[in-house]
Amino acid sequence: MKFKNSFNLKRKMVFAVLTLFLFASLCVNLSRVQGSPQVEQAGPVVIHVQSLAAGGMADALAGGIAKFNEEYSGRIKAEVIGVPYAVAYEKIMADFTAGAETYDVIAFSEQWVGSMARYFTSLDDLIKNDPDLDFDDIPSGAWKLAQYKDVTYGVPIRIGSNILFMRKDLFVEAGLRIPPSDLNEYLEAAKKLTRDTNGDGSIDIYGTQYSVKDAVTAHGPISFHLFAFGGDWLNESMTEGALSSRDSLQAMKFMVDMYNKHKVVPPECIGWSSWVEGVEAAAQGRTAMYNQYSPRVLIVENPEQSKTAGKWAYSTMPLKKGMEKQPGVFWAGGWQYAIVKTSDYKEAAWEYIKFMASYEIQKYMALEFANGPTRTDVILDPDFAAGYPAYEALANSLKYNRTTPPHPRFSEIANIATEELHAALVGRKSTEDAMRDADRRINEILK
Image 1 (cartoon, rainbow, N blue to C red):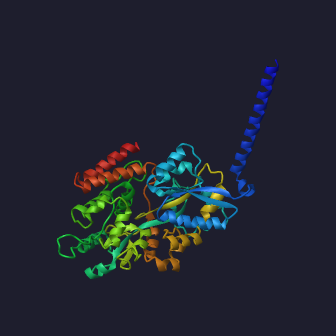
Image 2: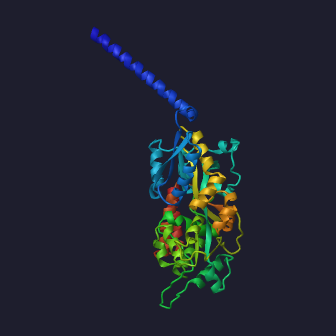
Image 3: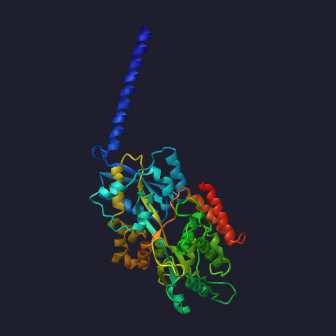
């Protein structure tokens, strides 16, 4: 009997302890959801910010984060979790689907918003109701990169648009107009600028270039050309592929013909695995024109990295003959900050995001780390303009930009398009057959 009573007593004590523990945990969790630790807890609130592990964006954000931690010392501290770009999407999605509460803030590419939106907090009410907000100088085209189904999930912190890099010395020498008025003139300029300069029978300077080895690299150049011809990856409702439509097919045929028929792009460019090889070719004088992401301007203009520094002019991408500049004719891509739904520190995360998107920090990251600013007041700032010769081209491009379709399966769509484009470039298929096959394969995954 004593044993039984003792057992019952122990069981009651264990139950009581568990009850107290669960009650305490519930109180802590409720307080975290309500945000009170940002005020009451000892020491600063720590928010975990996902960033890339290396590269220009990683350096720029690290500089901005250092400024934030200095400004908010004792209140909020941002700690970076660096993820290599090559595996960033898969790593973040794996954490989300596993229910891991790894991050408070995510830096996401516009290509990811369709598949990640369900894990993000809508920012529309915060943007609408925050009296201290200063986002009027973020252009509408930049906001589109952060939206899915008319809901805003992010704030732009790094952006670039495709602009045309042109060797002004070679244009003047060849008697060509800067910039080409349309894509027909662009192609004719590329032909004239493709030259064997030393008479050894090999081409030394190519008229233009693009990088299309894989979808990570190719989605930009494909988008540049699709949009400049009035085409797109998918139809308006994102229910079918549109690569074999009239305008899209013209764009893809233009890319293939530059490589196979006119031979105005370096033959090795279809094997370039990143933008680095293309920028290096421009910096070393291998190409006379280049449609490229705008932050790369500061690489070709750096005399320590580039033999062609000081020899470039810049403009918006030329369009198909007869097309006018209008919203959607230029491509833009970038990185946006989102607040993860499961974050216990949403107020602190919002303070951090506002800080990183502010005029002062966007200007600081642009001047010190070549970050692509997301604000027109920074782009047109005299200090930025003095060190960034493409500022007018960038500002004009962002007026009319759009991005790739925000479909949750866009990465697969881009893979298919790149594979079929390669088939046309190496002559395994005609461009028409390749794009029809691309649409057929895309439609299968969209069913």
